[in-house]
Amino acid sequence: MKTLVCLFVSLFMFCIMFTSFLTIPVVSVPLTITMGVIASFIFSGALVFGVWEGWSPLDASYFCFVTISTIGFGDLVPGSANFEETEDKYKMIFSAVYMMFGKNLFCSL
Image 1 (cartoon, helix red, strand yellow):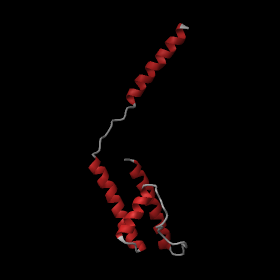
Image 2 (cartoon, rainbow, N blue to C red; image 1 turned 180 degrees about the horizontal axis):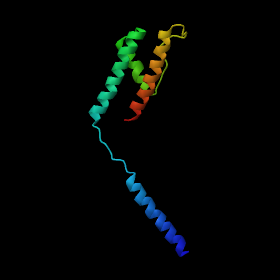
Image 3 (tube, one colour; image 1 turned 135 degrees about the vertical axis):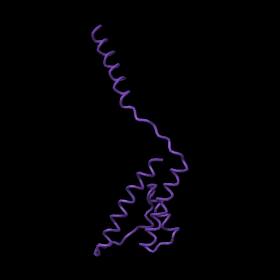
Image 4 (spheres, rainbow, N blue to C red; image 1 turned 60 degrees about the horizontal axis):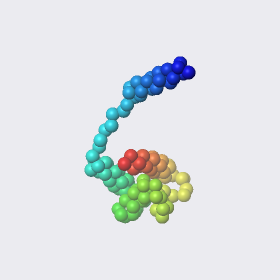
């Protein structure tokens, strides 16, 4: 019984020592910088989607915010149903990458 207790104590001490090497320093980013990055990401996407789709700036900003914040109403959808032109394929790839990075950025709040 005594050896079992010693084994658990040694294991516990090893875990404490091992985790002290794995600590990650906490970096504090001001809220204004975070919100500025998200706002610039939304507005840059709104600029691109507004030009590509012919949407108004308000509609394009609305689409970017709703898509990135995972609400996704579906009332505005980029692209066309057919992918006959190579340009349409690149637009959809850009849209998917924009959404993926936007969701990750938005979740980092």
